[in-house]
Amino acid sequence: MVLGTSCKSEFERVRTSGDPAVMLARADAYFGEEDYLKAQTLYELVISSFRGKKEAEQIAFNYAYTYYYLEQYILGAYYFKNFSDTYGASRYKEEAEFMNAYSNYKMSPTFRLDQSYSLKAIDAFQEFVNQHPASERVGECNRLIDEMRLKLEIKDYEAAVLYFDLQQYQAAIRSFENLLIEFPDTRRAEEIRYMTARSAFLLAQRSFVEKQEERYLDMVKRAEAFLSRYQDGDYVSGVEKMLADSKKRLKQLDNVRYQEQGSRSRS
Image (cartoon, rainbow, N blue to C red; front, side, top):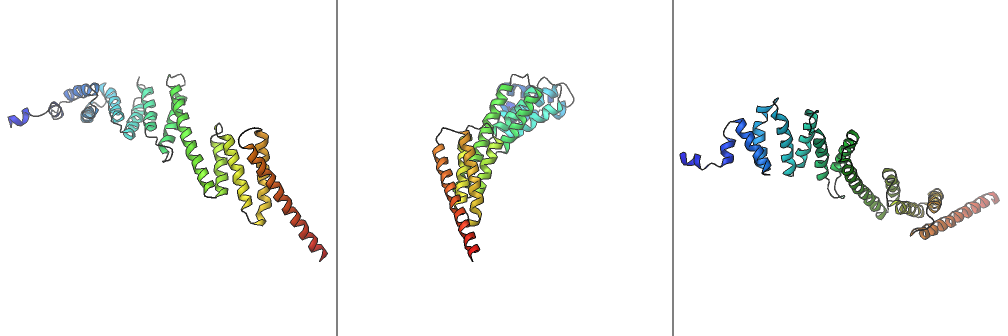
């Protein structure tokens, strides 16, 4: 029995001591030594003992950080948010609000995956900027927001291109148009407008005759708007050709309609 007690590790002796003051002192020491798992375990044991006391604030703050440092970002975000809600007057409030957003940022995946955490992080960073406009962290918040918005843009762009490749041109047109609404400052604006025009042209080309006039007219409108906006560039000649082909087809449709009307009047 004596041998078993002597073989206990320091951590086990502290953990089973039942003394909140001893456990807190060692938790703080483990935290300083970056042994976050042991620190977290001891903080969990003493949180209730210090609730309502002056030590509670620092315990809660360090406890949130143990989850962040252990890369348990979901819980880290939760406990940083809980800290800022609980300790509204704390000197750590600003940092906790930033770390809540940053923990969500750390969970933001590659653009091909679900972007729920990117959206959460963007909202949290934007809220931080609104609440702390003079903070030295505002620049970093804006940079990270731009980074995640670019990821969202790429995801939406790839989805629109997939519709195009699958020859689902109406869905492609809507997706490309939504891209310009959602990301008005995109660097891909010219390419997106070209792809919208090309989708409209191919939609018209593959439509039943009854739908072609309406869709070629839409294509002409899009092409002319593109050419009025972009006089130079890699896509101008392609749009000019689609415009010419569209007008040619509209003329053919008009001639057919004229001939059909003439036939009916003669009969």
